[in-house]
Image (cartoon, rainbow, N blue to C red):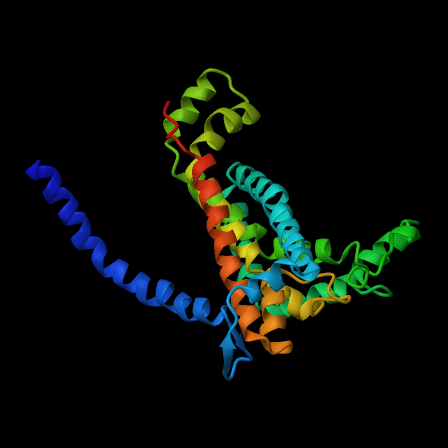
Amino acid sequence: MNKNYNSKLAIFIFAFPTLILFTAFVVYPIIPELIISFQNNDGFKNMGYIGLDNYRSILMSATFWKSNANTILIVAISTCVGLPISLLLALLMDRQTEGVRRFFKLSSVFPAVLSVTVIGQMWIAIYEPQWGVINSVLRSIGLNNLALEWLSDKRTVVIAIAVAFLWQYIGLNALLFYTGIKSIPKTYYEAATIDGASFLKTSIKITIPLLQDVTKYLLVLSVLGCMSQFAHVRIMTAGGPGDASRTVIYELYYRAFSASDYGQGCAIAIIFIIECLLFTLIINKFVAREKVEF
């Protein structure tokens, strides 16, 4: 009994400084936002308490739900397309020579450390309808009907932004997967080689199951990163055409600063926090719940 008590006390003592910092820099800043979300506030002064009216207006807004749908689409593309590609790149990199691996390590980090402004302007040029790379290639191979105005078409604008975001971080995610692969004991692969297992079978039976913790971490990182998508949208489309490419964070920015309705902006912020917590709880509940042992 004393041993268990001492163990819990030791955990509390070591965790207490982190808990204080977390409260000061994460929990406490949310409290003023929560209070303002119940006010008619233009960002400069409080014009009265209005209860749940801000939340009611937000939840009845078609633009808000459209921005949520856009955000979910970006999350889906990043997780369902981007992470599998990153994993495949990591698996292939592990099979290459040291020189090739060194080149990949350097090149994979480069897009992630570039300014978002540079990335946004580069992809604007790539998507340019007349002389952009994509449309130029499509026209050169006779697919003129597929040469679209990617950032001006409501059907393609969100996907175009998602591809730009995916491209920026796909190499970094692959590098993190590769780091996880290198932590797997070589004895597992030696035993599989003796049994005559192929690269594909080894990857499916050994590598991928033992990467579950890395996968879970990258899944949380990718989902929350996509949920907070703002800079790419602001630079590439400014939420347009119309409001077709707004994300939740861009809608928050528009309500608070462009429409001067800080109360509704804070209401969106609180809803956004709840959404992020729900996504995190779902991932923690259903992904990598048990350790894989061999």
